[in-house]
Length: 215
Image (cartoon, rainbow, N blue to C red; front, side):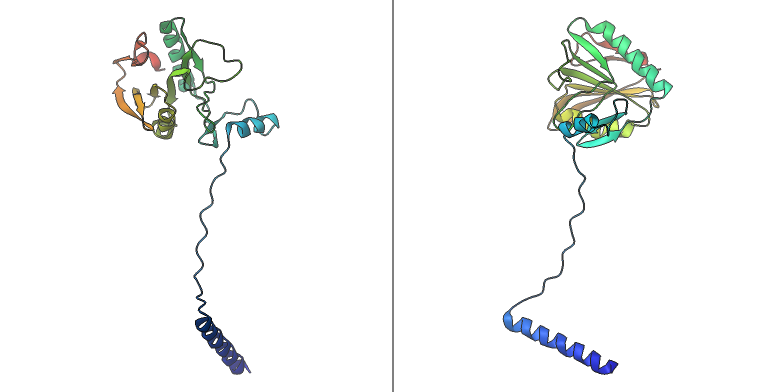
């Protein structure tokens, strides 16, 4: 009985193959499905999550390339460096600029990072966060986030046209200075050692020693 069933199956397959050749129908191999793509949030989506309570006001998150990114806890060294930098820089700026500490900068519809420091033009921002036209220098203080700050965030700030971007490397105790954004990256990259003096390319009044930015 099994042999008869097997013979019937083989006969059916031959007949189906013959019919396909006669009618010109060619069976195509199934193609693999494309890989799943992440859902990208807009700034509007991002704030809607806060309005309905999914994101809380004290949640440490930022919007990077449409993704909601959890920010690492702030350790004492990071906090001390941020405070030192804010106080030191604010004294040098004069009345036309001010330093915002760990507040959002809205770069575009899919990017609203929260840099450690942003030097912005002096005006009221009660209606909207500063954007690229308001922001002249962004500073990130890095320990565990160094790789991301030197790669994805650097390219994000360059693409938005932020004129100058500094990364304070707490582990190596050096300062990375990026300037002259063009075609999605910075043309200039300088590394200053702890005892060196750095002069901002964008803000002529901003000249300090790297050690003043460190804990």
